[in-house]
Length: 115
Length: 111
Image (cartoon, rainbow over all chains, first blue to last red; front, side, top):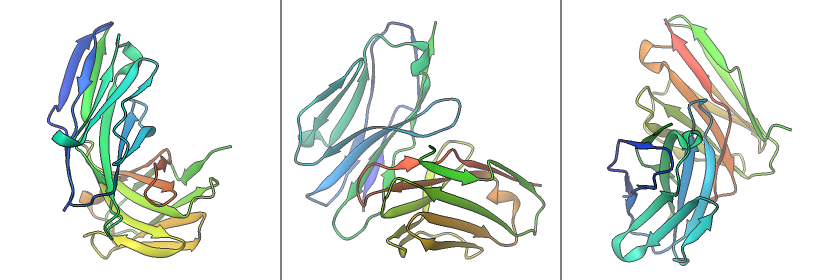
């Protein structure tokens, strides 16, 4: 069975602070895909990044960066110099390839960035 | 052009009624999904269709029935609505195992 754990329910920071959102996953599949999605207060769900299990290279996109470590089954997300517009709920998700196509989402981390 | 659209955006109805939510995607994806998001923001997958075939059918009451007339559409019909069905329902689409693109959500309120 697959599982995604986002242990941080809510994080509160002040603008310009760096913040890391943790994501730990469990799967028996050797090939799998990891994702991060953002849900701002307006409610829509927005795709941020996809990583496959064979690609452990870290990714940077502007102020966003992702650290994928298979050894610890983690796929953490860091926002550098946070801004108020980063306030949202962030979901980590996993899809395996071992016959089940069920995407598994973590329970989300609510990030509040104060001005 | 809206990539994934859902109608209606808001749905207020009484217990016992039957209602439908429609979803359409113009991204050329082969897989579509329905999710339920509760008040605590927990996203629970309900159904998924790949090339019009049902591939995911999670434990949901059989009052919920999905219908996929073609690869671009996935509708959700709910019979005998209950108070506990109140939630936001999201439709999404993707190529199988790839990132999902979500519709704007339908906020269902059952009174």
